[in-house]
View 1 (spheres, one colour):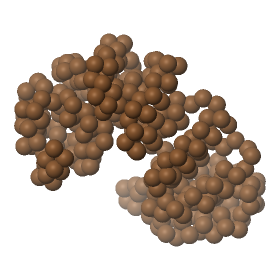
View 2 (cartoon, rainbow, N blue to C red; view 1 turned 180 degrees about the vertical axis):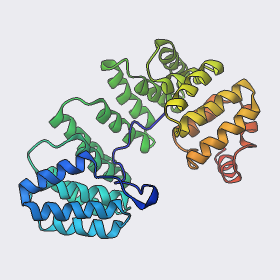
View 3 (tube, rainbow, N blue to C red; view 1 turned 120 degrees about the horizontal axis):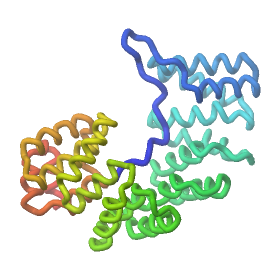
View 4 (cartoon, rainbow, N blue to C red; view 1 turned 60 degrees about the vertical axis):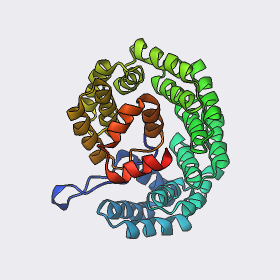
Length: 315
């Protein structure tokens, strides 16, 4: 239902008055490692590049890091990994592969995020077999990781292979039955493969277990059409994460079931303001399954015209 956490964060943002945030702890640690590997001059140039990026001068910062990476050696994974990360955010996915592969040529185990970033690059190029190869290498080198195994399942979902994805989630649940995110994703793949009874059983388990994850419990309650229960849980999520577009959207669906159409419009507008492109993937599958034809028809009258057109074309 929800993204399990962004792999890569965009490096910085402008603060009011034109000031920029200080470098992150990870970046400062990278500078220290780079100084030990390649000396203070290279480390200082790397710092300058990161500060350029934080000030919004992306091209200049990326170019400087690229120049450092090109003259580096195999032991310098700092500039290679940062360059690849920036290429992905800059839309240059193909360019990201070379520095990422440099990171993975070393025999030393790398942080999980390096494997995730390379696999993400392959996924964005729709090279899903390569993405899974990298994720499985991460499991082999670093040991079991639920997040990495979830990402493997997600590559099958990206391909539309929902039954295969469900098998991955089932394997994870057999070892981690308490994970409500995995349970909800498994339920959604049951829906996508016309196994509604299994989906409802899974949602009931999540809703009744009392997981600490209010969003996942709210979604499960919503799937069971327990509107009031879902509204309370989703409200808790919005209080904690006021920019969570999914919480607002699933609240919209709860109010559809509760037939409170003023609230439907209010929460739908807020959801779309936070994420104008949320009508895709999980949201689309879940909505189509959850609502009756009458509820769905009335909801589409409130959607922006371009969304309504797309929905009708899909029908």
